[in-house]
Length: 177
Length: 189
Image 1 (tube, one colour):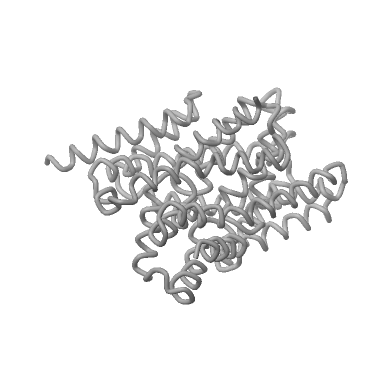
Image 2: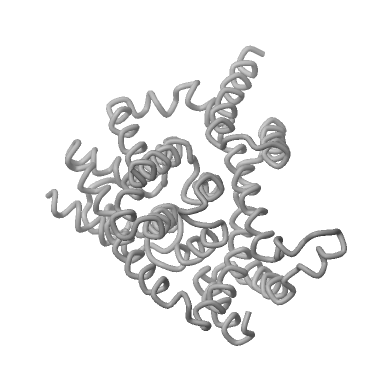
């Protein structure tokens, strides 16, 4: 069972391209349709909690499903499983790129990739903005953080903690009304 | 010593980066400024590009690549484990009271504040990346030289890919990144 958890998650880790949401259909196929380990509702729930905990969403969901199946060791197997293929793949890719970093074609290709990734991320961030700046208070928090970050050299950790405190205060005030 | 410091920095990132892999970018940019011998901001952009076009969650890929740059394969493993550890511990802590945690007023309030803030932090980090990639900042000495410093081929490629990606939403980003690499080679960027 532990090996099964590890291997299934290794498969998921090796097959996903992109962020956490890209993983959802693959997780569903493996966990719900093939293995029947969790129901689809459970999976969606795990994803929701994965978003309410720090870190990489897809890994959090894996940890949680592993925990639900087999406790601590299950969580460990699932988590290590999902991160092992990417670690191996990136080490290979990175060593190749590093070995050829002086090559003029690699340089040109990386320069082109960098311009392309800007475009790709611009669209992703635009989607995030639409999703997370949805009511007046969140827009104000977002704009304030943006302005303060541009203007001052504030440690990112401090910004996150401050935003959390502001969020708690706002929701308390809202509730009192 | 480097490894210990790496572990600490990536542990912090894992603990405070909320909202998926991209949320780690502001932390990594900060790292690039704090530890210039680890990796540069420009290299970080390449990490992101490679991470988007290889399998695996983006946050894991970026951490692995950054770790490799800092300390080879061992650095990869240490950084990635350090990134994952905080959320692993948090989930173990809350696992027996998941629903209570999810519906807790304080947790919901905190995330109500963190989500828009996280997006703002990512936006800032991405704008910095734009400047790094599209403008040769070191060549800017005056307002006039700013226009000379703009990397026009990069801007053109950026604009073309942005338009294409906005139109063909269903096409996977890897296609656009590959196209960018190809264009980079053809036009000798």
